[in-house]
Structure formats: structure tokens, C-alpha cells
Length: 86
Image (cartoon, rainbow, N blue to C red; front, top):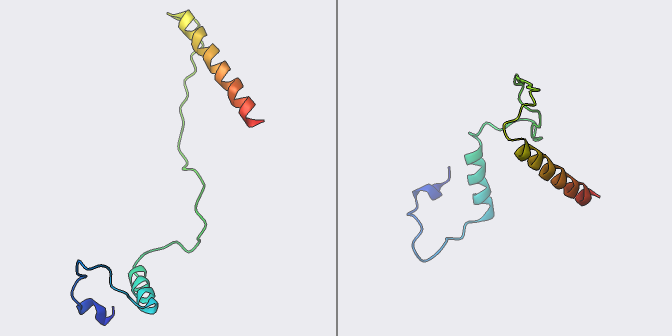
């Protein structure tokens, strides 16, 4: 690090002006210890996880009217979304 580390902290009077070269050197010295990936592109691959799906085709609903109402609302929302995409 630079000799600036021996200076007293900033006063309440406001920020101190630092030459650009000193600021860049300080940033470089801080980032030298960071383990950054070699490839700057982010990884968009999803994690590989197992998925268990149990399908229940039982149509003996306790509240059939509530189910029909939910399906109707879902269909209505899907039609609104389809109109927005166009």
C-alpha cells in the first residue's frame, strides 16, 4: 500500500482529493487478493437437481366449484398475458 495509509482519517470538513493514479493503485491492491473467475461471462447453467413428480388423476374433488373457478381465472389471466405478448 501507499504511504497514504499513515495519514490521519478524513476530517468532518469533507472528502480529501486523491490523485487518480493513487486511487487506481489502491483499488488494484485491494482486488489483488480477490479470487475472480477467469471467464468474465456469467454462468447461466442451472444446477442439476433430481425432481420427483407424483401425478394424482383423482377427480373426486371436495369442492368442485372452487376448482372450476380457479381454472377459469387461470384461463382468463393466460388470455390477458397472450394479448400483451402480441
